[in-house]
Length: 70
Image (cartoon, rainbow, N blue to C red):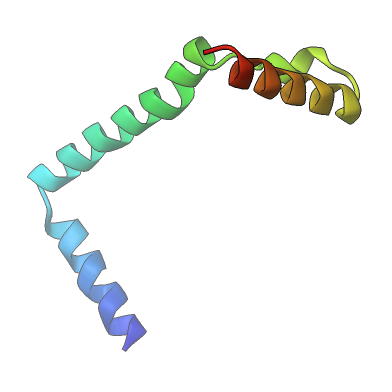
């Protein structure tokens, strides 16, 4: 049964013409969203700390500070 399902989807993807183009566009958009935008909009704040305890202190202080200030 799983082999028949696999063959069914394999045949469907082989026969696609417009679908391949659409899947290519979807994959390019996902790449842009998850890799390129992450570099510009989500900097790595914790990279400047060496130890795990320094990272924990920074995160806890930020959470407390943001909870206090509206």
